[in-house]
Image (cartoon, rainbow, N blue to C red; front, top):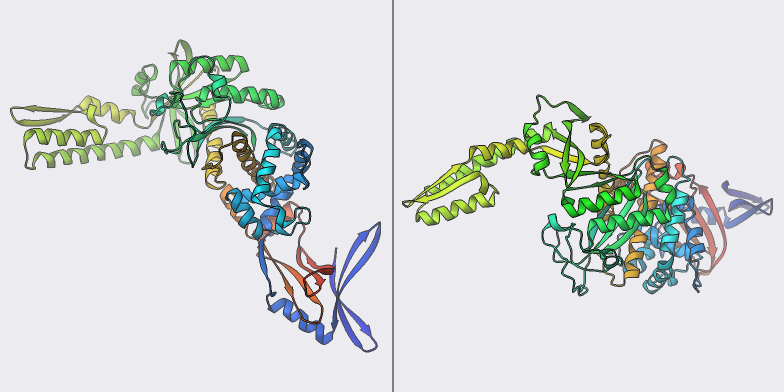
Length: 593
């Protein structure tokens, strides 16, 4: 729609106005913003282009428009409005969309969203949700309205997501993480907490499923390395485009196996088509689950849900230790290459926890050589420290204690023999142990219950876990999913939902742009879409008409390309005539983007 500056020729001279054309009822209509005669119009145009308005507000603009457009692609407002039945007076779909978008763009608390982010956003000009209604109290009210419908909304959103070109999932990757909580902890009279990460996933007694069914803030094995804080566990399923497909929250001390079981049941119940569409279904887990009870439960899960698993195991485990020791760069065939990464290895059959498994024993050439060099340097430094300690003054007992502390600090106690005899201290390296430790560096082992899986496929499946690891990184760094300040289980679950829906919008945007040849990381994309702003304010002329003007700023080429890719139109310049008090009496737009 064209917008022009018009000249009206009259008997007493030329007069100027802004003219906008629009279609109404099938007919072309025109709207004019009268500026005045030539002298007055030139003065006004000079003011508009060189002076700031008297009450200027700089508002974020581009991120809101872009993410709102993406959410419209999956019918977000409609799905939310249809799912929530309440007595809310405001447009619930629009209100929740505002929360999701503003939280995705600004990692603020609910108070921060209402008290700061919304005031600085183009959303504050929204006619459906007045600025004074977007309050912290209303955000919590709408979170409470939202809670009973979260699963239903998620299921319907996923159906819409799968309609987008190229969004069909080749893989579904499921994993869990913990999110720390601030504030006073909930009391927990269950003796479940573990200090040792290797034991944190042990399966408890039967009936644990019910015990871990409802989310609550408790202490557990903290993946954020903050054992002093209570936490919440969350299990997340994503596709290979990083779109969150389903999630579930758990108490902070819930074992992985219980969480896997619950999330698979939820996926089967709410998204059966996802499991049927996925070309491959593997549970991927790491060394923390290496114990008989966990493997027993995982074997049972895989048979029940027709999955397979791929797991990393400790190189020190008896089933793989001997084979890894014999593995070397010279004889092992190449099984995987990517840029500078070269993996060599072989498949073997092993018996582990009562079942025959396929094991992949492999080494990473680059990492192996680096680690071996670093280990040899470390041994040399330890020997120098020991030699220096030997030459210092003190009793033999004191020297023996100091040497033992040096060796223990470097985790080499099993590689040195320290003896004290006739007031003489000796510290002798154990050559066989040092060679064994050096030989094990850069070597790894994977096992699977799929006896038909080859080495290359096994590595590829295990590396898919990197998709969800990157997802967790983005959620914790860019979206600040934690720490959590909520106590009510319902609000904790909605907190996760709101952030994951924001992540869904950004992941869809990244996918859509990538299909058009525009590629960014999540960090780059979020930073870019936040660059565009608008200037809003009044040009006040006492005793005469005043003008309310809105300008779009900071739309660079990269951001303009995103707008064009999504077919988003915007106005560089919007003007309305208002009284001195600020009430608008007419409007028009110029320079459409």
